Length: 225
Image (cartoon, rainbow, N blue to C red):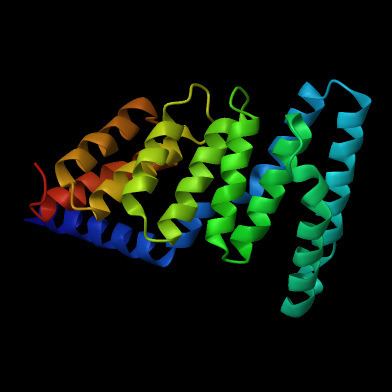
């Protein structure tokens, strides 16, 4: 009896955590894009023109975010709109400049809750960088946007696809989100299987701990064995 109560308590707490922090669970890693892409830029820039383009894009990003914590929403919106306008010449470029520009544009569109546009930018990011680290990141963040639009099944597939990329730093998070979306869709048996996969593949990861708790909660609710 005591064990059952502990399981129920754990399940209830996680449900509350996921509900309260749903957006954080979805987009908590969106803010690392700039740092990651800076590293990639240093690694793959092969021409002076590309280096110049990336430097200009970084200037646009800095102009938008500099001292932003002290600004009113109206000024933040004005900066975001100006940044999107300034990015236009770079969005159709190939290589790292095109990837970088579309990633920044996608982030801005997401913050403006323009999820359709963000999806288009993530599609361009993926198309321009299929063989680099940004590919699974583009799929992951496109899935986030799809969830915001209520396109849950499409989001599930992209979380799964992103998680399958070797050495993707957010693979455990993507796999957890895949299981979470399956649970939302009522596919409890499959969700439990994926939650267990998270805990098996990433035993020391925080998402593994959450996955284990979700399995317990679903079992307590008699939704899965």
